[in-house]
Image 1: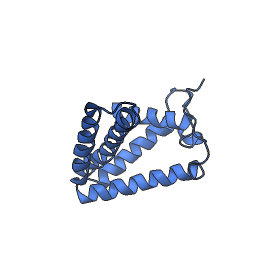
Image 2: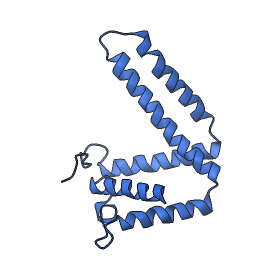
Image 3: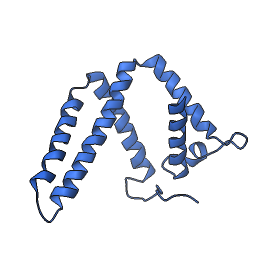
Image 4: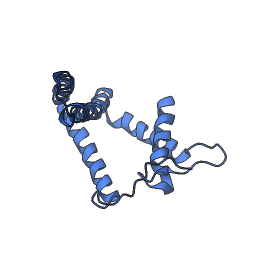
Length: 147
């Protein structure tokens, strides 16, 4: 239940900042003061997932996204501490390269269904982001803290 409410709160934050449609995801129930639409959405999604996918597939899909994120962190670290640094030091090169390589090896060894499902999910998110920002040109998503 805690993860469902945490996910609902995350969706609410994304709705409030216009990353997702505010009319659905950015609303708070007046009586209970919770993001009711998001709680119901996450619950229905989890229920459908429980019927349609195995626990191992869902866990590997989670790992698909997490490993891509960790590869991105390693790439950003490499860029910040080695590529753009005025002084190139080996100690700033080796950890992000090793971390990125380990994450990549784990990522390519995920099951084929997890890679396919994760790629479809990532493509859907990329398409939605492209549509939402008019081809990634418009700055429609606001990351400022709302009043």
